[in-house]
Length: 389
Image: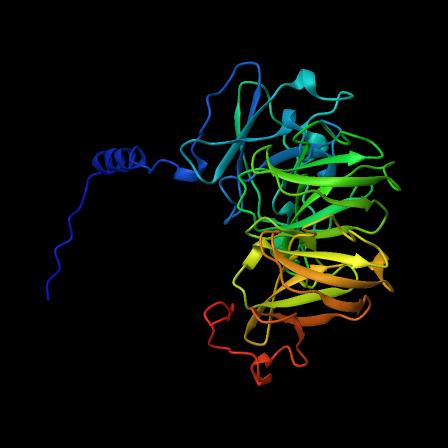
């Protein structure tokens, strides 16, 4: 086979090579690297390309030698909070003014980022990251963050400042706030109180937390949670703050109850469980009289603390309080005082008790809470019984 080879003269070849050199491709700039904020002549524009999975409603802060903050103290410091880019879900930006830097420090002394929801910035090995950057005013600068702390262990270890209140929040509130009164009214803020300090994963549970503050150990305070002042929940407490964290759960229907870090509700003292054969539900109240009249409240008594599933059945329950152990009381259930059942007599507060409340006679003890249908008077098909499908 004959091959045709086209020969070029030396001047022609030189001209061709020059033309090709002029057609070199431009440097690629990906969308997430594009500048999202306007450059200002008197500020350093710093744009963070956040780790994959960062929530668009997260709060991200910058800290380092230049502003005198660390990973913990940066969270909540508005002056150093980054702004979410309007046209990118990957970028957050901040304008840095050298006159605001402390003690002559610059970005070359090191800086990093912290997510309110997921903790501080970490490298691929899970170690804290510190960037350095020789940046000048009037420039835009990209910085990449690899991962947040929560990526590695599911737990963000935070150095809390004094007592802390953890909350597993299922309220659906837009902004959970905590107001406190007691030994000190308006502790950490007047109504509606303080905002969530941050979020921490404890034993696989995603918990909001409120740092109560160093120096507040020993204070006895009543807690009121609300949706930034709206949809106020019932008072909880009083709680005495100590070095031991307070763990609470807010249910979807607005009940505040104790929680342990395994996700199990912790009861306060003895518990009275009630299988509701009247269909009164959450309006069922419990009044007690005996060794102490009006125990836990005057007529019609205390409201339902919560609900618990035992076997296939849903029970109402009432936490009677550890301090009431040893008292003997009469129990009267009513539909918030409108209609009452006969007394259940002489309950010695100590052991938990399971009762069936029906339309005939006084409440009756259930020996096997998982199988109440074995009791001859119990009709598991009654429509008024709350049965879990």
